[in-house]
Image (tube, rainbow, N blue to C red):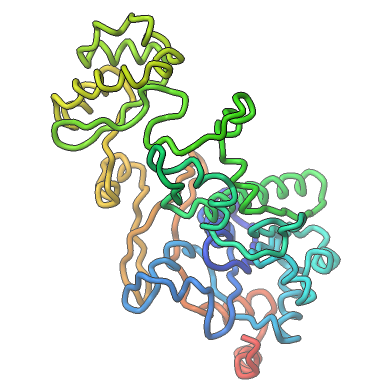
Length: 394
């Protein structure tokens, strides 16, 4: 019994931002009915890499969901969707604003059918503002949201962050918005619309970049792997690889100096406080770098761990999948897909003591649950469902 057991979610999303949101809700126990275009399905079913002809990309984002095909360009398809809205708690979509309205299925229409519905819309620029109807993908909002302008080598070109944080951030914020709206509905009985823009989420994640600009009037630039206001807080070369050392306060600085043979500078006024270390960074860093090269990464890990100094190696993805902490926390799980076979993917990051989330089903085959869901929700017969398939509704 997951914490969202009994919650019914109609999932009209595709590709990444929306599916990431509904995957999280499904991991926590909600029933996710994924509505897909007949024959083609979610666009990401056609993104590589593939395993036995099935998209690993799609499978990694759509576990714990049931697939129902539905052609929303047909009147019967629209009527079926409206029938679903009467019976579910949440509808999630990530179409360009205006798309659902053109279909006659916008929030204003659906809330008349079910006033308690939580209607969550994730889009590039949101459902208001001058950019609202513009299309967007992850790279676009990373660029426009300022993330790229502060990422990359020092004095180098702006760089896209590796994971699709434009999409993933929107997925996370949408899930939070859904849960907040559900709590309000539980208290008042009133549903509402949740409007999440990928660009808004990027701005919300700018963290201290905004603070730096508004207080100094200097436009932040890429600073490589070092922290913009904490020092030392970055990778250093060891005698075999690299290790990240994060000296987050002055007490950690003292412990670091003790174990790194830097006692000659530990109380030096130029380095004893973080503002001074940051100010005198160019003079300080070479002294630390020389010491770090004297031992291996594993040796430094043991030394720094024992001293309580935050540190870590720069793991490859292979390293991550083999990391004992990652494994111990069930953050790499294996699902068994009926066509693709066994596939490893990331586990559930939210650990709940009483109602833990879980992965109990692989990503569905396109239309796999047409018969199950239509019988369960509307008591359709096999013959009626076959007719809908023949008519191109399913």
